[in-house]
Length: 371
Image (cartoon, rainbow, N blue to C red; front, side):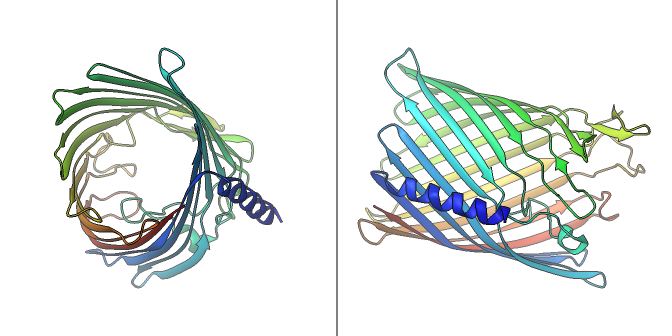
């Protein structure tokens, strides 16, 4: 009954968005396959549906997907599930050229149309986000209001934003009923500078604080603080452009439930620091055809626990390369084909006691119509 109500709500939102002056509808087919030296293998196929509309200073976007995920550990289990994901509804309103800075108000919702109350087999399909695009099968009703300000003067541009994510209660699994994830408070900022018409530099950052997770009304876990900092360099030419971005993520100590159901801060950090770099290029082959490529590298150091501790998580390294070609078939119809691959090295952790290397292949086909 609840899911039916959410679906009706989504339909009403789609009707409202369809009244916009400019409307984009996008869908397609995405396939992700992977294998590992530990014998684990699997695949995920999903069909995303995005509707975006804007009128004057108001914009709205609806995003959902239908996914089939399969994961196999030889000699242990082979699990598969087809389900729809949660539905994201994003709204924003801009106030431009009226104050000392432009202001953007955002209001995002997570509508729980996905899969929750997982049984044991389905829990095994909550996979590593470095392996699959859809790693969460479903959450509760979430509300995320944001306020951002942006200012451009001479060769500088700067922006700052604050957000609050209220996360609603839901049944995560058959053994974790009435799960209430902690709320999230975050602040983001960015400064950019045009050295010349072709070169632009960027500095950006984010800080996030997590509230306490609860199960059955009792405090269960609190994730540590989140600190992100990065820099970027963009280069523009008439027919092509390149963007190089590097960033680091530092996470604080988390709190876990101990005897007496009291949350206690851990002695060492559960998550190691994370560093990543991306090089993205786009080339306009003609007025209707565009080529894109991206090379990415991620490195996460081992956490602070001793290597013989049951809480130890080893380092991880991931390298990926992707290519895509997009073509404007008609004034309203655009298509894109993409192909990519990755190699992921994962150190031993509490899920597996050996180092493993994953190799994966990603293929996608997208269609977008603009009205």
